Image (cartoon, rainbow, N blue to C red; front, side, top):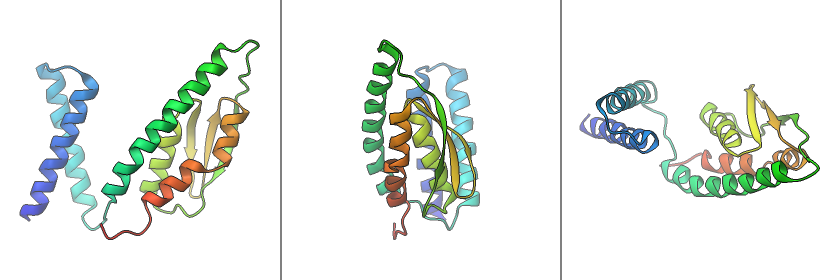
Length: 160
């Protein structure tokens, strides 16, 4: 019981820290909203996910890789925007998810795709997602399933 309480408090403290970093404000209103939100998210997580293990270490190692992808995508989108004539050719792509049955993994995949500039996850079904891509290269990168393979590795069966 003490271990779960400690984990709950550490999760809430971590979320409060993230909230503060993202908001950049230290006034009572922003900190209060951050504390309430962090406690509610932590409480919900620990009430409904008691026996589900989350691969924290693999997820933490995934974040730097994702940041590199975001930077590369930023550069690509900047080239698209500033090129003359414009090479933007938006389209929707149906991305089939193979081997990703865990809903958490599907959400991480969808959010990761949305975080990379030039893409937006519009809808997630049981085994596929609809993604808006800014140009053909972005759509081809999605079909290469690089992000999907990384997310699948993060959520493989683990003993963590």
